[in-house]
Image (tube, rainbow, N blue to C red; front, side, top):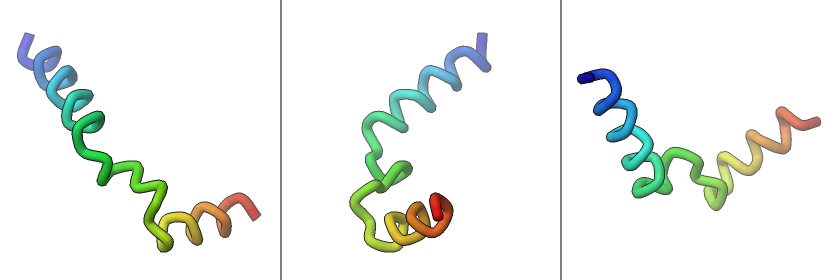
Length: 37
């Protein structure tokens, strides 16, 4: 049950914290471009 709660909390955090994906960060974008290339 604890793990389940944690998972849910994590999901909420992920949704509430747009810092994880950070698709607007120039550094991340550059990195993505490099990886795609």
